[in-house]
Image 1: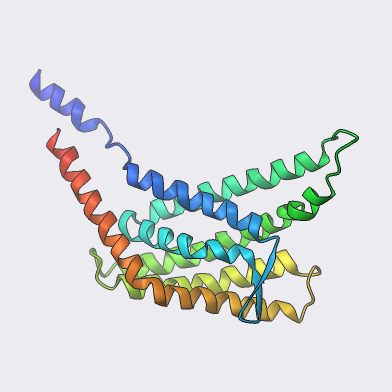
Image 2 (image 1 turned 90 degrees about the vertical axis):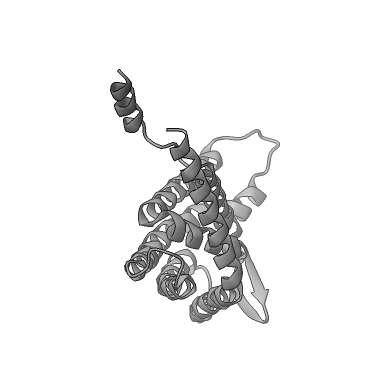
Length: 229
């Protein structure tokens, strides 16, 4: 009987880490916020870019940590969840616009503020899918040589650069072509890539420390889980 109980216990899957759940939830929320902010243009040191870039500092750290600590599969799961939520956002925004409203309500400002969200989300879905695929593939390929955090900073920055070039180019062309002057688009692409890369270089020590902290917590969780078996 005891052996049978042990066999049944061994088949019970390990619960998903609460830290991973929090990281993915915050990551998905940041991408939702970014697609709303992307409807607004801002100027940084005389360079024009989308306000959606304001969430990048957090999404970069989260994406790097999820890829490093939990691996390619969970990084893709986080990406697909974010894509699904953004598609739902675009659908509900358009549905709310097309539905009739009271005669006294003027939805002009609402449409002006986020009415273009569907185009931004379409651009985001396409760019994010291809950019994240390039990023994760490059990161996973480079990580095959190391099972620990050695070389994490190089992997994070180099793989992200490839992803940013693909992501920023596709997003800018789909979201802003025929909306903004064509001569403004190359500047937005270059500025977007440089700002993201510059932030990564500055934030790499913080990102590494976050990855180390999460990794330690996960090892403690593993030890605690196995100790209860």
